[in-house]
Image 1 (cartoon, chains in turn cyan, red):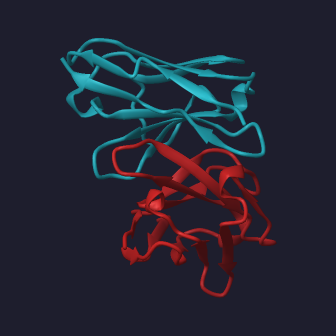
Image 2 (image 1 turned 90 degrees about the horizontal axis):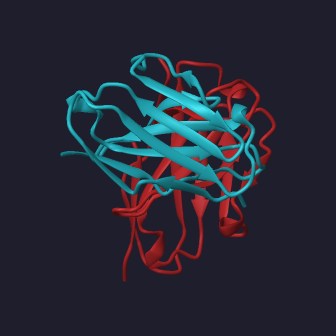
Length: 108
Length: 121
């Protein structure tokens, strides 16, 4: 099973700042099969990025994904108040999918 | 519009089974795989398995093998998740989610509202 390690566990930033979230698989993952989700308290997750770098429908262009192999990144260029939430990466290149443990993005 | 509507909250005793339904609408049921993902209180997301509604084939996460069964009813466009031998650690919100691409297993684009399953004696 591929383990996804996300860092940092918690990221404290202010609105308007840039956020950089990391996801590192324990084995190489095809960039076609890496996604990112946002989850707010009490809500279901929302797909932000699929295929490592493609934005899902309706996702603002301040969200971007990049990376390959064992190093992937989600970047939020300028934080809006509604962006403070928990973010998960997800891989589906093996027959069994896995999620990272999450990064909590909190207001500084 | 695409909708996934799950059944209501459940309270079960240890050792019992629970069956959660996920009724879909707004798209062609047979074309998109359905995932099940759970989230224990205050914890992260955990992928449980996936079903191909077209033929009914399934893939389960190793840690749930033998305890989880995914089925579908093509007459009502509904998918079911059955989890047996429940223990307190199975207390969680269970989500169904539709895949992004047709006839493939990839990311989860549309999600149900979640079903809270509480396991308590």
